Image (cartoon, rainbow, N blue to C red):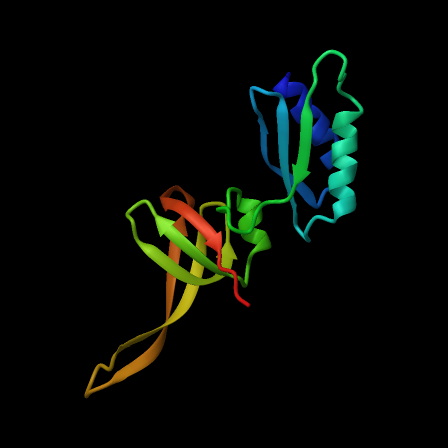
Length: 154
């Protein structure tokens, strides 16, 4: 299976809706094509069907048999692209850094180099006994992020 041709067909379908973007494309040795797309405002089922049809109708099953799956990212999977971070502003993220540090906070900003998380923490008072609540901030460069996942809150 020609991955470049499949990628072209997916990108061609995505070009019809600028709010959608490709997260991942893989083709197994058994010709199972798996396409994962996301959108700035979510991805309706009708868009997955449209993308699937564009790919399927432009590949020849007589030449090569294949299976095709077009889906959205699994919420339990890590964030891969900057555009996914932007989509998740104001959500709580669990971030593991390359230094094995784990930070959980609300994503408040995203730019070309990094993300910014904020959270509340209890720290000892400067004077006297007890603790006080303070807002903490972490700016984390993409290159230092090992894994980032959206925390599911019910």
